[in-house]
Length: 244
Ligand code: BTN
Image (tube, rainbow, N blue to C red; front, side, top):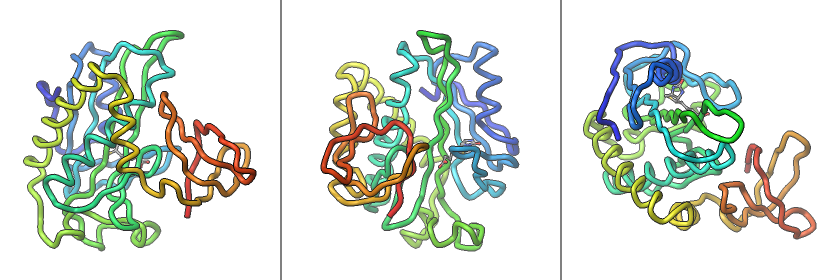
């Protein structure tokens, strides 16, 4: 993974560049990385402010053999692998908020966005993008997100070399990817539970259909969130926002 690197100083979104690159036949593991994005995007069509060169803005093309149904495993896989690398390098304690946010203390440090090109039964390719806040100071965050955001630098009082971080992230990604292929999702699931934020705690769960308070109980074999609802029954959630 990361054998082929496409670097452009400024792009609209590395996700778009990655889609185009994949459609031209780019190999599994190709990465697209940039300094600045003019139209960085997050989940649910949110804007991902990334027009400054203090973060790691990256998209990776994967061509796994799986069904569209299993693709969400990759978001969880990415989160687990990133946590491991970042904890090792920085010594900070990092948690995963389902499905795709990395948190330090109570603040978001990284977001992951998975997009795919799939036909009925099979996945053509997956693009996994992540935005990692590295050397931002508080001024880099907009008023709307400042209170809820952080960077590695803010948490550790030093700056980080983005290239070194990238190398370490890709190395661990490769190792973990291999293990994941050998051992299946249970390998990732176990680790995910270890890093899960608010496991066993009550949170507010907002699904497209309703919102309710529930206790985070774990994740299913295909990466869905399992919660205990108001009546103490288990519910499997595929799409939701979690608040506390
Ligand atoms: C989220 O938290 O909602 C996901 C944020 C994902 C941001 C990354 S930055 C690199 C890649 N390019 C984008 O436009 N988005 C992702």
